[in-house]
Amino acid sequence: MESSIPTLNVTQNQSIRFWENSIVRRYFFLSLLVTFIPLVLTIFLYDRLTGELQQNIDQQRNQLQLKQVKSEMDSMLQRHQTALKAIASLPDIEKLLRKDTHLSASTLNLIYFDIDRPEIYGALFFNHQWQLKKALPGQSASGSPYWKGDSFSIDHLPKTQISNGWLIGPQTPVRGKSGWYLIARQIDDVEQGGESPGYIAFQVRLASLTKALATLDSDQGYGCLNIVSSICFDVLGQLNDSTEPPVSTTDFLAHWQIQLNSKTTDTASNLTTQRGLYLAVAIITLLLVSLFFTALVARTRHRIKPLIHGAEAIADGDWNHVIPSSGNDEVTQLTSSLNRMAEQLKNLMAVRIQMEKKATQGDFATGVAHEIRNPLATIKICLQSLPLSSNNPQATELKQLMLEEIDRINQLIQNLLDYSKPLRPSTDLIDSSALLQRIINLVGPMAKEQSIALTLEIEDQIQFKADTEQLHQVIMNLILNAIEAIESHKDGQIHIHCYQKSGKAVITVTDNGPGISLTDQKKVMEPFFTTKTSGTGLGLAISARLVELNGGQLSLSSSAASQSGSGTTATLTFDV
Image (tube, rainbow, N blue to C red; front, side):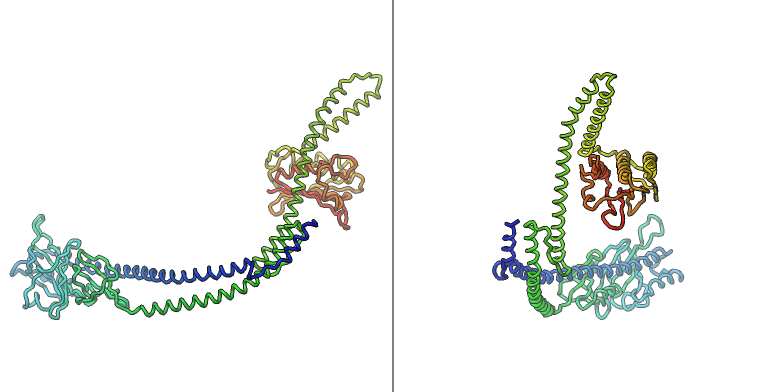
């Protein structure tokens, strides 16, 4: 102990200078470096990530808008195809392909009902060679082929097949006339198996289809309907001559494509401004971090010094040293942990000494028991075989006493073996009420003979797992100890109480005997310790071992340690 004191003083007198050998200084600059580098990398990566993220968001939004536009265009084409199908299946509709042939008024009314829409110029009837035979004007019809004017031909227009028909065109706007396209379908054959006489088509204003592109118009871009990768129409159905590459596209029909074009914007200045702002924020952040770490270093050094001194004291074996603590942070928790560690080390050493002591006692007891038991058995056999005269009663009595003493020694040896190597418990579900009642019936006559009042109180019908015989032995031993403790005490009382508390089965044996002193309470369950004039001092030690093997706890408390009264309570606790 004397050699540890100078070492402790040397440690306490050492001065750890911040600018020379301080680990805090190293971590201070390392923290600044580690803070600055990730900050710069974060700004760089954030700049790229936000750009990519914005690009992905724009692409997804663009695709969603393109799908919406495509859906609207598909819906419009489907409506026209449905109307065409209804007209193509009208009776005698093929008469319109013949000269000087008229349809009934009801059939014409049905046709005009379908073409009297703002987006439809009229209905056109072609023979099977796509030559125009008849044109019925709608409310928006003007010029050829409805009235005299230029010739009408669709030979130069591309034909795209859609479901059960064709989309012909589109025709680009010419001489002030809006662009248009045809939706055509074969006229149903009246005679089954015959060749179709021709086609019926709606001439539709192109702007009625491209108006769906209005969804794509914004400050950053605009929509365009691309035909055969060479012609692009804007939302008004006019030709678009922009050379900007499309931002996003989606296929609409064969050789038809809906695309979103970008508008040229000056974003360089905005990007420069944002990066300058990022740099300014980074510099300010670095200054604030430097100030923060400077204050943190000073406070940390002040808080760490007591920990160093305390740890050195504990390392030197001074487990009673208490490190002062203040605040409510990690250092405080570390201080409490070191103090608790010192206390636990002290307790651990005490437990280890106790375990080594018990192990030594057990080995010693086992060895002594085996060494004594064999010659003792030989002595008993030899003594029993000695012939004695019936005329010598004194020798006969002496022989009987010697045999009884040999049995008593043999029982002591058995107790030693039971303590050193108790039998493993055979656990079973125990009914505490039945067990205690059986014990009361056994020891009741003995207690009555000693004028001791033996009472039993059971609050709950508790069942728990333990070895019935071993538990029976423990409780019997506790009651017999209580009877022996109050043999000469007037108005002796022993009270057995069974109840449940906090998920535990509790059995207490309480007597009003003289009690146990505070000094003896610490040693009463140690082997070979006894306060009786006769006895081995193994009863409570064996009981404690048996209870421990059954997963329970045995504790003793006595009011003799205070001035309030006397008596002893043994408490058994088991998990329910």
